[in-house]
Length: 71
Image 1 (tube, rainbow, N blue to C red):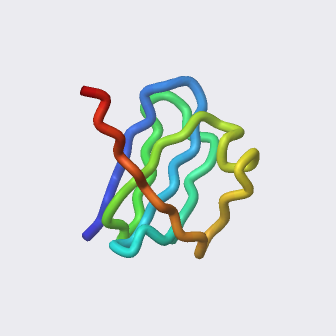
Image 2 (image 1 turned 90 degrees about the vertical axis):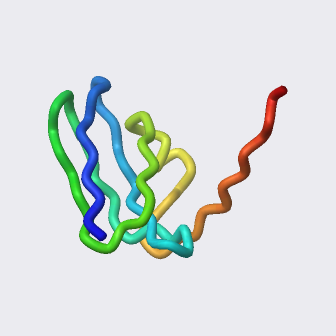
């Protein structure tokens, strides 16, 4: 499945994840209305520019996604 995003914020980065939530592509320096895609992505994580570097995320890293119910 091809996953495509359109940047709507100032400058951001997107991490494309496979079904195991492993980073398979990082699109950098996306500006408003720019596009990025990744053929085998199941998920995309949009982050402010600098967060990927700050957290030392790289291709082949696995992410653990936790959803907290605030109700």
